[in-house]
Length: 147
Image (cartoon, rainbow, N blue to C red; front, side, top):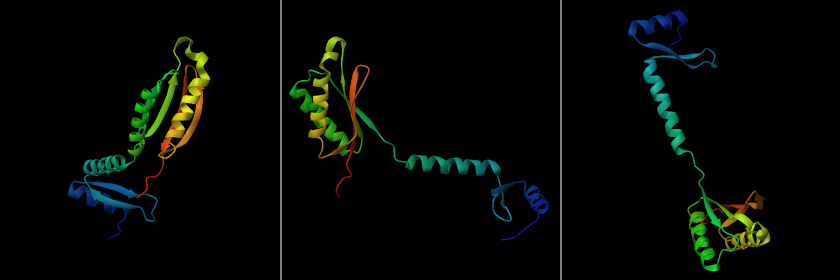
């Protein structure tokens, strides 16, 4: 590892037909490399892309109910929610009130609480039933899987 003055380093880079790139400006003295700048930028972009691809992405699956959802439909959707939670996805379940069915708010809330209770083994509640306009929703996150 050699230490050169700024002028010498620029001169060496020009002689080789390359660029002088500052790698670590906060170091004392600053660390520079004589490399092809376009190749350096390409490598940096590649590293950033790799880091981004390894990042964990949170998936949110939605399950829709009506205030008058039957037991069979409820159980069918419950199995799907169970599968989503086992895969590690969050589940947003909501009751959509169409037209005059908004009068059955308590029926929708009971349905969602029943849904939470049925999935308590696989999920923890992130958001309790909350009414926003014409839909009441809950959010469930998967519990840590046992190894």
